[in-house]
Image 1 (cartoon, one colour):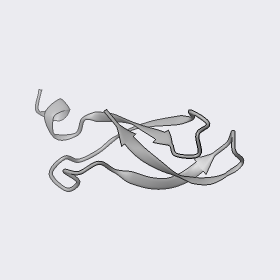
Image 2 (cartoon, one colour):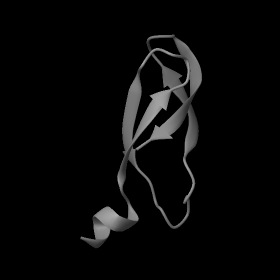
Image 3 (cartoon, helix red, strand yellow):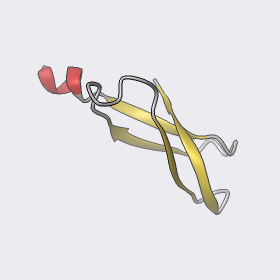
Length: 54
């Protein structure tokens, strides 16, 4: 059970408005706030900010 509490599965949704998502895990101890990563959005065909969605 400790695995799920420390490193939960999160969805990263594109801010480009395409609805594209990535699924990943994050370490809650290192990143307690919502995560924002710049990743490739294949629908928009460019890099965009992806925000954590719970």
